[in-house]
Image (cartoon, rainbow, N blue to C red; front, side, top):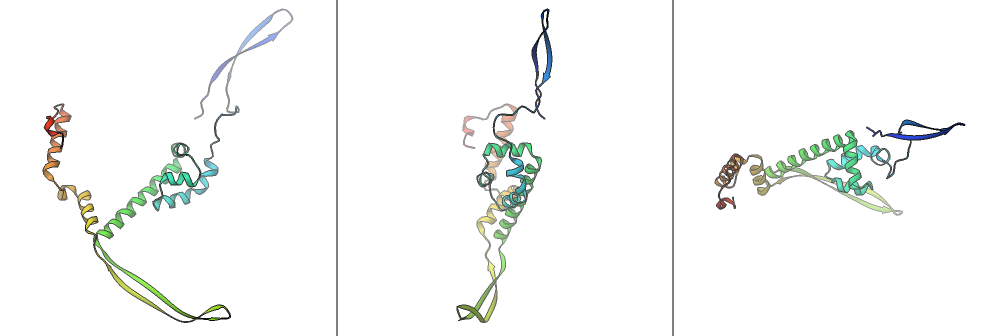
Length: 193
């Protein structure tokens, strides 16, 4: 919402006998030019919203988008704050990215099969042009081994109550947190926990 400023202006009118002073109220309108840079969302960002969504879904960061579209980081933050369509689009694209990354992490952790297609073409050169004489397509099914590191990472982070590394340390930290919330600070011996 634009800011409206009321300003008191003194206007002097001369008459033949004396000088009268009239006080008028006028509001500053948006016709006065603003100082600073123009708001270029309509020309720099809005036409490319579908591209921005696709880039964010593929893992491009907002800093990289700022550099690509030649927008400063503060201006980008202002666009996100003022334009709900941009902020919603970024939020949805980040959710899709997160979903895809978690799915890929599960695929890597579990392993699986994939098909590899190899195409071999035989050709001869006639008058400087390639002429394909024959070819062969080979499809091979290959197996991906499970990634033990990713499996461990997912188990610890997705199911911490069942797969935590040191349950005693976690129990001690919870106890220290409960005491801190009650206002009873734990002893100095608890610092490393």
